[in-house]
Amino acid sequence: MSKRPDVLIEQALRALGRTRRYLGQRTLEEYLQDDQCQSSIERQLEIAGDALGQLRKLDTAIFARIPEGDVVVAFRNVLAHGYAELDHRRVYHVASARAGQLETVLAQLLKEMPEGEGSDASR
Image (cartoon, rainbow, N blue to C red; front, side):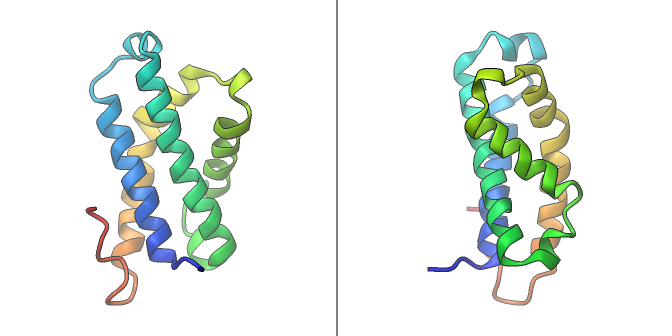
């Protein structure tokens, strides 16, 4: 079954929301000491990147509106396949500084979708 663009954006939004929630107010030092938090955040960023990778294949026009969308998908590939070289400081930076920005862009894209699409973003 083929997914709709709004469903993929919703998946990415949910994962990014979890990323922010799981990170909370942790400092970099606290994050580096908490391997459970690291794993949780890495997984959510991987989910968000995978959803956007699927969106890139499904609807290039919508994907083109995501700033640095290709970078997000590439980062997902690092998380999924390059964990031996994973830089946890970089993951922290993405989770603390970049995930919220991406979430804002995706929420706006979802709002602009035709009526009836994208109504479940809060799930």
